[in-house]
Image (cartoon, rainbow over all chains, first blue to last red; front, side):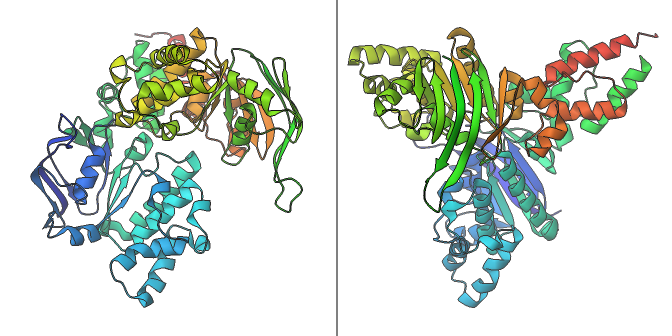
Length: 280
Length: 289
């Protein structure tokens, strides 16, 4: 299968820091995958996101995006392929109206006006913000702002979308809206869109195809959600959350109930408990 | 400190075409040393209540009684300033309000502002920084050189330094990672227990409200729609969903178990309670081996 992202042995250290933010990190992402990256604050997740987009330059190692080396010569083509939504909805607005804001990325790329007139409304429609096209971004809710930021990215049709804790500052309703908008986009584009979601929301990570766990700048685990969540206690030790079913399993284990090692989602845990109940 | 709302209403921009009833006829009492969760979806009036509690705005009609101070529409700024000394409020993302050159100076700002001399202010600041577990090695650093979680602790210390009797927390864990969230909530629980602080927690995290609060106020459209124990509020899925509130995970999961045939008590709202009930239920079946 074709790899859309290849990260090979990259390291990065901030000038003001005494330790490496990323330390010899390698992984790859298949075209069309949805990958969640989890790790506590300061683990290096956001640094990684910035390296993928050449907002930071790796000290060592190399990154290939869609077969192309991420370097100064290629940075503009790479950025056309990688769109990012950041954490704080307040920090990513430049336009006076919602539509202007979505057009900003297109203007930057020198897209002619005729095409913008079609692309902007289509992108806003995709995230169900078309009725807000003429509003000022400041008057929107957090979830609406993040959806506008997403529309700005959809308009330039990247192959990869990176969500850098894009839902962390939203209320539960806003969070659901944003996730639903990205899911819908992913369903429509299928293999043509790859999603990298850096998140603390474990339920969101549970829906990914694969999870990467980063700790102190290193990749400590990778696998399907089921594989990753089966090591619940290890995740907790790394300062991460586990899904509810796993929390309950741990609470039962603490009460000396024999629980299976493998990861069970909620439905399977209900079934397992019921079987146990019948057997007793 | 006890706080009582008596027929409190608040109107934004009264007497103009933009007049907007933010709060309508609120009546409730917050007991001294209680831990109250204030919940409701965005726009339900929670923030207006916070501003009233901190004396930043005055009720349009009705009274708020803080022990022996009565605040109504005509209360002077002088009285409000007195009330504010007893009520500390930690706003959302409080680290954005840090401004001083050093951590210690930033925390001293509040006490100095309330008339303490530099010596007293410094002692209060040191005490507060110890309460939030910020190691002394950071006290002379610029607050902007700290991590996000540490910056938030400094901002909270700034509020604790005025030695409030009531601590109001507006989404105090928003944006923190899972460990940061747990440490922060544990810290408030400890302050509540050891310092006899009255805590009012404004949150969207129903799990936190279910875990830590002993009293819950539910707001919707500017009105108080429920005032009850966490058990009463969170056990009722249908009602919570009608209010567009999240249901704690434990309650949802318990419902799945009940649908499967488990006979579980209605009084289960957190994961430890559910595990204990399941363990008992499994034991009751007897061991046929």
